[in-house]
Amino acid sequence: MCNCIKETEERIKAKLSENNPKYKDKTIKQVTISNAALMFLDEGKTRTELYSPTNITYEFFNKNDELKTKKEIVNMSYSYCPFCGVKYD
Image 1 (cartoon, helix red, strand yellow):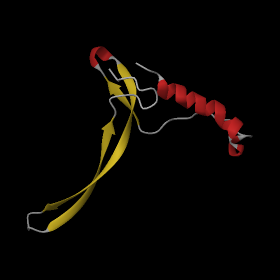
Image 2 (image 1 turned 90 degrees about the horizontal axis):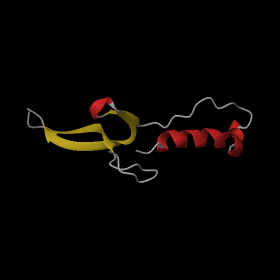
Image 3 (image 1 turned 30 degrees about the vertical axis):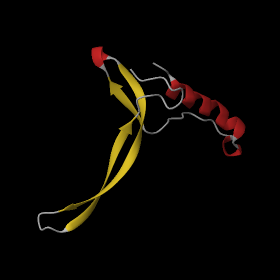
């Protein structure tokens, strides 16, 4: 299991003040990658995985036989770490 999410957050935090004039005179307290989910595994273990909100639009006929359009957002999780390519257990 990799630790890419935490490592990437730390790298961003360390480099942000150096490379971005907007943050030069500021103290970066925390960097958090959005769309990270805490996954509960067997034997009480946990890990953090990234996911992507995915927009779905579909049509259907309601009870009055009228064509309707509906939009939903579902979360798509990854089988592999998008940073290093290691397969999630």
